[in-house]
Image (cartoon, rainbow, N blue to C red):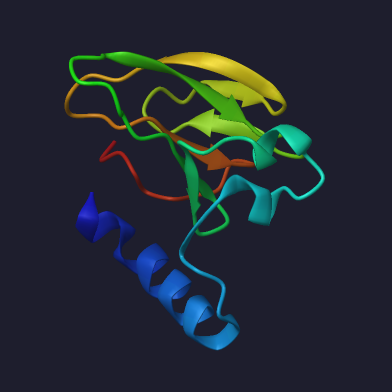
Length: 112
């Protein structure tokens, strides 16, 4: 995955160096009008197109993820589309951190 994401990571690093916007940022930076995103403190955006929901509880294999309003979201692992402004329970086996792509962004997370 690291190699597949290299172009995206390089683009975000360049954007960060030019604008000062961090590569990893709270949801509220991308979704300032979604008041719920101001309260979410256990997820982050990686660039403008990838929402990351880290697993924080030892032994947990699923978690609830908030998907901000103002975008449509695609589970990067399953391809399932989910409307923004919702909370969804997401499977999180050891080898898959919960990731969502914003508005169908063509980011090569999976190898298929």
